[in-house]
Image (cartoon, rainbow, N blue to C red; front, side, top):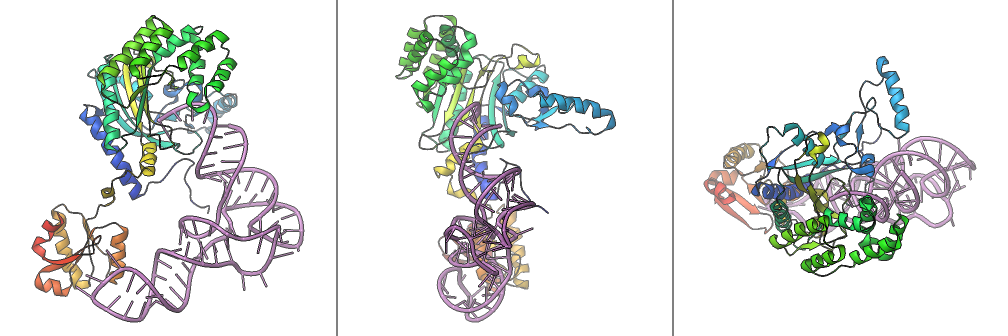
Length: 453
RNA sequence: GUGGUUGUAGCUCAGCUGGUUAGAGCACCAGAUUGUGAUUCUGGGGGUCGUGGGUUCGAGCCCCAUCAUCCACCCCA
């Protein structure tokens, strides 16, 4: 039999890892709840057509598709063969696959809103913490199965929502100890205005893909890429000016108005950004006109959260406003905005910066030593009484050398050891030893629960 | 999807240009000593060298494939 294994890019989580993950997840969940968001869960799989075409061409390739059952049924064989031919041409086909694992939480959420908009109270604020799957090649900070934590508001165009979501980012990252995080914002309207200034909205994608790489490959290479993407000399000069805008948030807004002039998109973008900058009292917030974000459903403000610069890690969160997502599912005019936290990357960052609190690795408070058959039966009753007080404890499973029992406690990070032997039974007391300090004392059995509380 | 890295005991690794029964440290188990974790001492279990082919008298080492891993690109959380 082959050695057991798990699929590429997936992981098993041990107790230690789960406790650390729960630390992150509960922090995020509590903040979401604090801001009035309600939980939602959607299935692991969606109908393929729900997902296809929503994430751009690259995104479609990364969707995990599920093979239909019953393809070998005689009455399906012809269809299956036909579907396979199409698959080889790069087209997915419902006769072969009609379901897929979800790729993010936003599109399934939009689908949910479109299906249930008659029942929902708007603005509808929901949060969702679930795994998603991408057929990407794994590497640092990139997994094929990972967890996203999303908060979205639909049914409101108020920029207050943008401000609230920024405050959520701030509160979560601060609580996790990532005070040095960065939150970049931009507006799709600004990018659109730039594209128009450079020959038309159809250039938007070419321009954003290129300028998004600025901090990675540098200005010269960005210019070369722009050239390759068919932009002319004048247009590149405009983009270069655009990229050279610097200063604080207010100065940047003034500069962008100078450069792109007063047109509908520019003023919309400036209005959005300046409202946010003035109302989110958040020093980590930085306007970054090079921020683009690939997902093409965004229509307004876009966000990207980055780990403290001391850690080499891509974005640890992102989001933005999408004014017509449910329109993709036939229900127009429901504007929305959402943000997402990447738990797995946040985990890696906290690990690297050693920011996990030390107290989260214990569950059992005390280990009762097994001092012999009769003694253990007696201790067992005491144990149950302590448990009745809500204190987690356990007894060693067999009578053996104390050495071994100590080691067990040590490995499980159990802070206290309780010894009840024949001498203690007689005096109705026990020995309680604190493993970290090595100190021990005798206390009466009636005091034990209070002591451990 | 493209290019590269690595894969030897539970863990970290060594193993020279291919040459006898594949090693170390830590961990583990048993024993000695002790109603208290340590130290020490003695003994022990463990590896089809990622997997499958090939070259060779002979492969952990060379070649091919495959899987996993990590990294860069693409893209992204």
